[in-house]
Picture 1 (cartoon, rainbow, N blue to C red):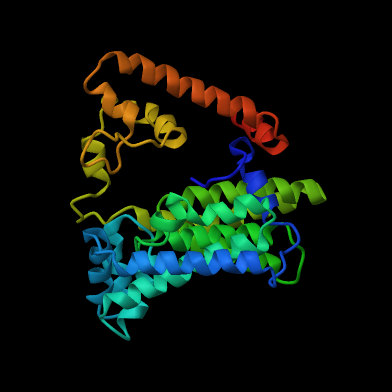
Picture 2: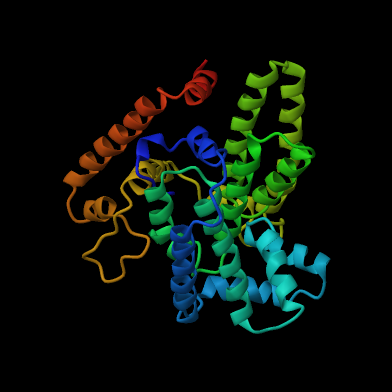
Length: 323
């Protein structure tokens, strides 16, 4: 999901530690030049981006809600927690011009890049290149969805998690609450970060009672998000809708996960290559790729496990999972 010079080091532990170092100088002219270039490129692209149907759909939900309670009720049918809809609803109280939505989204994306450039301890090359990858320059910047707020909140949590200051826990749980209520997949991110927080906290004080308290607080924080991702019973896409359509063939989608995650190369020969993966698409024309894909997915998964075994916290999590 996030690019770096050394892919093998991208665990939750490394990500948090890279944001836990000494903040970079705000007077560094190179970093400021990179930041300004990013804002200019992202702003230019956003200005020439015709908003997609899903972007406008979320905007229409927020704009058409008479009040806050109405907004919460309407957004429950979307399968996503409501933070992004609350942002859109707030914008709609001042204007119905979609350019302001894009401006707000650009500010959120720029803040995320600003924190990476000036407050992370990634190598200088990584910090310079990361903003200009596909995700930070397009997916998290141009598309006005709930991705960028989730990324910004992840970065903020990484910044405060290993610090020691007054009201740290209050700020941490507030950010964790916002993250878990931003996107359905952000709930998994929040759970991963909180698991790291639990391990880090336990290593510091070795108190089981304190760790148990944080476990309960994490569960409590997650409850509103879990409530929102399940649509109401009168929704066409309610839980029963998905249960009725579940079959063993859907399990094959799990085998495609490693291919999409570790080899995110689109099927370049298709005119509409968006959201495609070249090995998965090749399987449709050549049955041999069924075996090649399965072998590749297993190999990538085992390789990831082998690399993560070198990390203490990742090894601890693996042991707790299997034993």
